[in-house]
Length: 136
Image 1: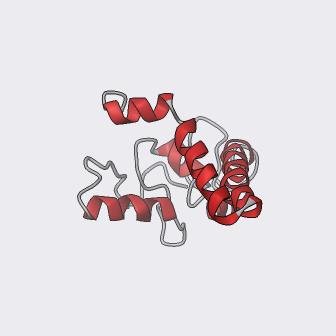
Image 2 (image 1 turned 45 degrees about the vertical axis):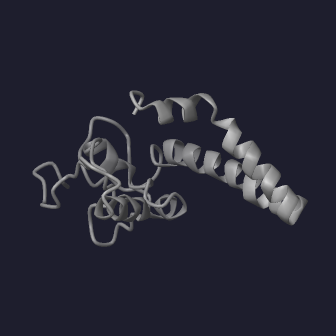
């Protein structure tokens, strides 16, 4: 992605869309809309990210025998749209789908799959949904 000029600029000027959307939300809805639309959203997303990297390395179930302490946590997966299937991610780090069983809901994968069907995402890597030899 760093070869793409758009993504390089977005990485460098990440604050511009936040500031512009914040000004627009403030103008259209006032302080309450600004607080929910910018500040709460950013704080929630940062805490959810930290939650994945802390909780799923302490508590949960291990579906795959990996060389680390990663686990899967259904409630973290619900809060983070599928990122809580962290043991699955550590076992298959290049897979776009983290929810590998029917009961492992992965909303992020549904979004990626939709983009793929629309032709907006290409070369999506997946782990085949067959029982693996390393699976417990």
